[in-house]
Image (tube, rainbow, N blue to C red):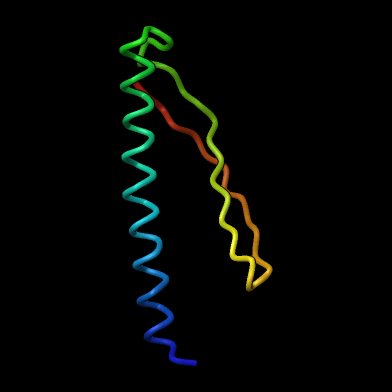
Amino acid sequence: MNEEELNISIRKFLKMVGVSAQREIEHAVARAVQEGAIAGTESFPARMTLEIAGLRLKVEFDGEIRTG
């Protein structure tokens, strides 16, 4: 196993997920505010699931998204 290659690929994957997830959340919040569904001062529980079938890995991360 090449540890350096593994670490680089993990970091690239996490960067892509982080950037994409942030963009999706920002768009969802903006859309909800524009539609009047939220005021923009709420907090929302959030859950992220990481699954890698070939490694039999499935783990969930819980957190909170605050809009104001």
